[in-house]
Length: 254
Image 1 (cartoon, rainbow, N blue to C red):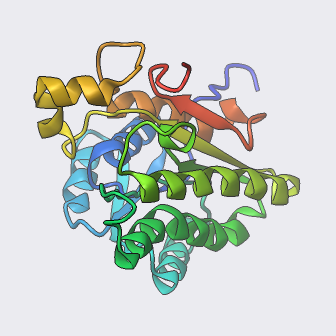
Image 2 (cartoon, rainbow, N blue to C red):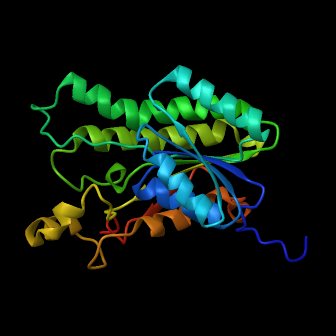
Image 3 (cartoon, rainbow, N blue to C red):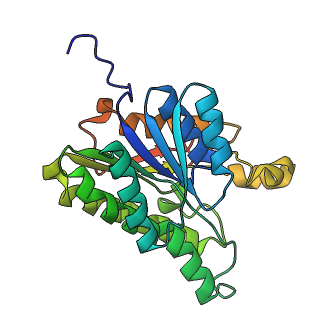
């Protein structure tokens, strides 16, 4: 169609986990600003405030409380969204956590917590949404990490391992559902400045260590990661699947 903007999200319904703040909130705001309906989910009730601010700016946004590690909750969330909107065009598995400990200090509870949110939730989310996407296709973006590519920091064994699992799961899922025009890609952010690490980045020595070999003398912004997410969810990315999309300021390039 002449004049069709492939980056537009108009008429698309996108579910974003961990949407209350940080990168998830940035993804939600950008997709809504491009005409999409965003359903942002989080265990943090502050997600309602984020959704309200998007609506105040003229966007379409809803908030649902969501424990992403719960199979029953995933079933309920997908049922609610499809009952109301009739479809789900995009899923952004954004929720994530980290535990900073050496291997010896890491407990089984730490392992289960990190893998539960970072990987089990990605599996559950994909499995839950795929039947709803089969009829008309769709886009799934699984948020991994530059740490899935390179051992960037010590004491992040569980985080790095869980994000590596996300990376390979994404590729196989893309193979399994290619015939339904369902695209499955992974976004791998580098160091992103959010409220979670803002205090750490204020210390010059810590900041220098965290920057590592980033090619820019700064951390990334949530809005820069959101540009890639919105692109992957749009029709402009119609020939991209099973890909590792690094938005890390060149962190892993050397």
